[in-house]
Length: 345
Image 1 (cartoon, rainbow, N blue to C red):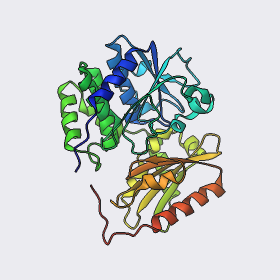
Image 2: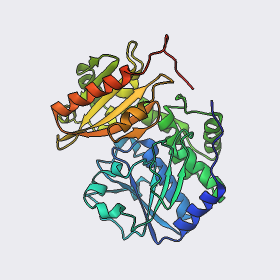
Image 3: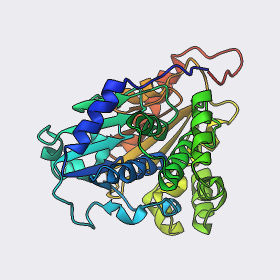
Image 4: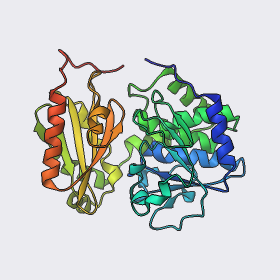
């Protein structure tokens, strides 16, 4: 288990100088934002307020996930298309490996990301494009929240209860409660520091893993009913009709792909989420084998992520969907399978 990553203090200082030099910082988040993607910018907003810097997290595409409304400071989060954007002079992207993952914020006006507005880029995805004027990318970190915690330590920022609660949620969300192979001794020490700073573990575990509305059960029924096999691939799809019938949000389907990943006889699990306009699919891939890198598979389709968890987006309808599954099946089949399933690092 690797525990060797460290942020270059010069990079942390460059990030602080750049952020403090801004009048207003906008922090757009990746599509269908998860706990790490939302809590890390919220923690950064709290920290920057201590330096007199205004920063606004922005949900760039989709609705505000209801299960994340317990995070401190959510009242400051803007929703693209619903709230007016502030006059920002700096972008800070946290947990976003690719500018294309910024959804409608990027699609509606590509000039927002043409470099005229500088970007501070903080991330833990190995496929990050290093598009910032400052890049702090640590692929061995469990989450972007763990990186933000380390940055704030290097800055000498006060670890307030609000910051600690946000960062703990980010770490727990991306590690599934300290259970993924990316969880290192450093991760656990960071979580312990956050608990000592006043983070409350119970609401994090409740909102991320325990509590669920009835619509989630309906959505899981929809997903399990649609399960298919393609060679070593187990996959399902989440259609707009399914979401509408169940009255469910996109975030309610997030745990399904991890659940399917443990199915005996499968090597990779795939879930396809139909776009709202029904003209494409957002894809999540999961794998458990050491030698099978799903991020490399996702890269064939312009996506990326981590060796065990990755994603992509494909345009089109039924024909393109089935072509995608066929290609993923071919890519997985080309990788020799172990004699017995090998998990962990």
